Image (cartoon, rainbow over all chains, first blue to last red; front, side, top):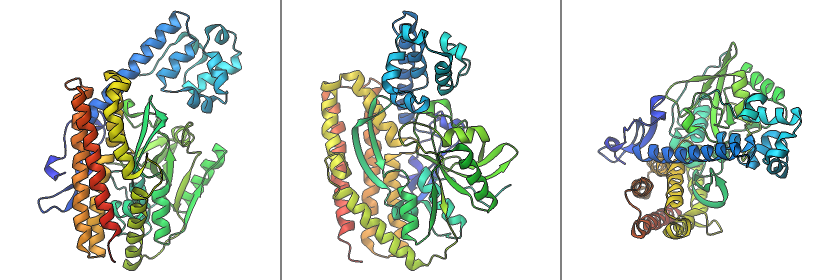
Length: 135
Length: 336
């Protein structure tokens, strides 16, 4: 890529920092150039987040319909699959899958709920009510 | 408490941390591209079995940790690398290193990295940064992708050092153990060694999913995505490919340019014109990776999406595979 072709589209990272790119000057010699972002990758990131937001909304509806416990909502919200959540909480994946059932979730001890709340970085009360205070 | 340290911004986290730590102990000539090349950083692997955010994992660089390890080894610099079970022990070790005057490389997870915008925070645990001091409750952080140094509170740093999931860092820290004088001769040897290793990793690695064969294989797979996944999911997969190619910590197209820069810098130490010729080939594949990303964007934005577009996308990767195969074969055949 030529130095003058290094894209300067403002992406979400571009508001915080510009990124270093290696590019060639007019003699073909490599140098560095700062970039504030590239439309193509900003759009790829947007699409990933649209997909995530969609999954969060679906999960929320399923919890409201009593088809799943609030764990499902927070797993989507925190971008966690059962394996990551198992690593954060110390539960086995099969236990987490069981806790995804609303009736099993409702019978969980405070101690277990506390572990989930810590993993999702929320309070136990918010865990039960799907309240999210932060952006 | 603040260690004598100069923040340097770089294109990629691990090669940046490696070159910053080495320049800090007096190895002033070890730029980011040199560290990347000596550490044989260029790679490709398509790993559909590992899911990242519901899509296949695609790596454009070598396994995390290897660039630092290989570069130091090639230069004969002893290293300290530690992982911890206890958070308290991890913090004490870090503090002791700072008191002793060493800036320290840390492997961290990006999900809770507070200075990143939320859109960038995924459960990716192989980001690298340098801690170079502490003021009150704030650790002074040199994150190589940032233009300026930043800070993390004690709690925030602990949380990212003990992120969980795949590649969990376990508080991992690393730094060069002592100051070593590096001669140009050592650099020449390290360059040759790095090129040889990279040739081997890209041309001779067994399996269809890695090296230049892996790029070719992925090209073939992409042609089938439209039928096997449906247009919407295929678009998500392509967006994933572009993100892994261009975003923080990965940067596939960017890595090709960095390797091109490495070969030019290598030429200053080892004036063999084959290096310059190969450098041009990597500039060419870097451009092709970016051209393919533009086409992919056309598909995931919904402007394009016919089977012919997917075929074209796959053909780009096959073309890249052939050029990189040629470039590495040329490097392999250099008579030093």
